[in-house]
Length: 360
Image 1 (cartoon, one colour):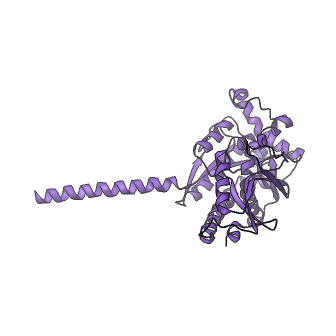
Image 2 (cartoon, one colour):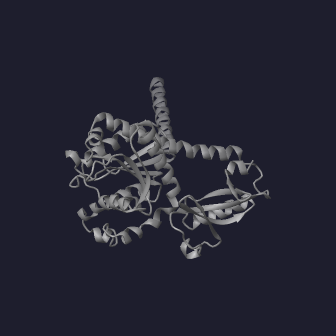
Image 3 (cartoon, helix red, strand yellow):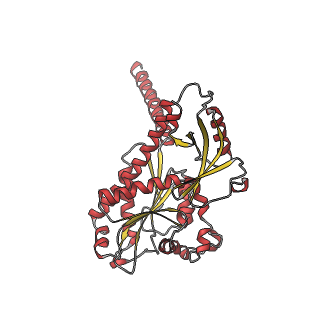
């Protein structure tokens, strides 16, 4: 009897222990950095068929390789829009990412051209600066004609119309800075680590990016229509190298975010109610390639909007204060108006300075 009681006790403790592990795992999952990987095309849509290669197959193989490497990191959760050869509507791909509340969306494709053009490029959603960028987006967007009820799902969007493409661009402006940062890291790896021709970071009206509400990029790995590059992308070596370059860029992006948070938390002062006579805090709510009037109707009803131009981007800010507590309140007001990824920036004598430096 005594032995049986001991066994019961051990079994009970084992159940409690296992339950504790389950709770910990669920908590950890909630904190993971979520990356949605999207292999372009699939199923009845083969993508481009340069030199007899299939874009849909190459994109899928590279996406699965990226995911396999990312999944080795216990702090990253990977979600795929497709893991096999199947057709997935563009708007569904965006829904998958939005439902997962992803931190990043990365769509992978291969390019084509009537010449022997070559090189890798990464796109973010934005104004197509020239006819070439529009044509690239037009090719990728035309897949919606294969979808049922595409007119209903895309509210009359026409991939062949520059005006129609222009109409979708503002939706992702809030995430443009972060998207450009990730795209730059990917391109840096392609050009410097792999010595691929750098077709740089560009903006174009890809509807698959328009569907997402997080930093998003579309990677054109290279041209299947180029004899040498097509063979490289179709090889195990090429697919492994391109996958590692994308994976490394995603990890570097994630690390940079964590370092910014750590620096801020470490160096922020204790008494945040103090007035900073030489520092002005503002809330960055958006970055755009277009110059908008700083009127409330353009910014979800927020007034006291200012803007500056940095390079080719206009950056928009809500409010201003020399009090850090006041800045936090402004940030919460902006978030309540829908600017979920807004953040505090600091200016000293009219020049932007790192927030941690301003709070020293």
